[in-house]
Image 1: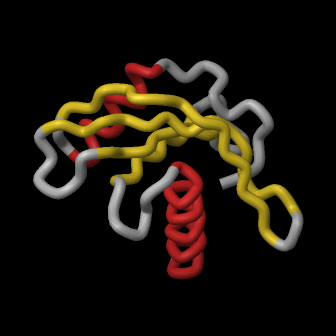
Image 2: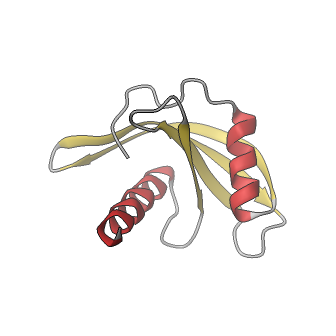
Length: 109
């Protein structure tokens, strides 16, 4: 994930809702949108808005967090949809989990 001061540009709530429903199932309804800023060793890693959705009909989660970021070198966007869990219980924790997962994936590839 790269830092982008306006990662929510050109993102429709319906696109985020569809990403959640496609990736995780259930029916997502927007509850709120919150600003998030994650830093590492004092340097910004990601900054933007995370949209919090209530999730209906999912077997284990009642909430999901979603946002998108531009893909470097492309006009396309990457969508992130993270389920609420005991450990991932806030928009900031969702962003942190996505950053960790992305770094682990790059390490394997």
